[in-house]
Image (cartoon, rainbow, N blue to C red):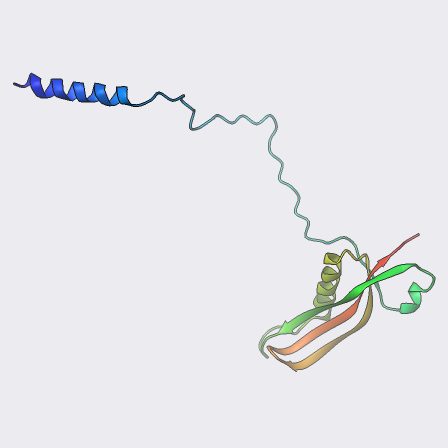
Length: 135
């Protein structure tokens, strides 16, 4: 009587294995052998160099195309935060010009403004993004 359950189990296992189609066996974990050690790609945090013109007279005789107005801000949310920085506002203005494919900015003004919506004080820089043909 003990042989009957063993025979049924063997028959069941043989029947299940015959019902499955055989598929090629793929290695789930292929071996990876790099030919050279992987080098990390450099991260560029600086945009292309953008020339800042503070005097419009410096552009006289130089061909350029005006790409539009750009601005940058630095905000002091409340009185206990760090003071707004004109240099940060200028840097953000230059980054905005870089996204417009400009290679120069003519600075119109930088100022610190008080009681702006959302800011206790705010440094703002405004200028024109330019594409200058350097000779």
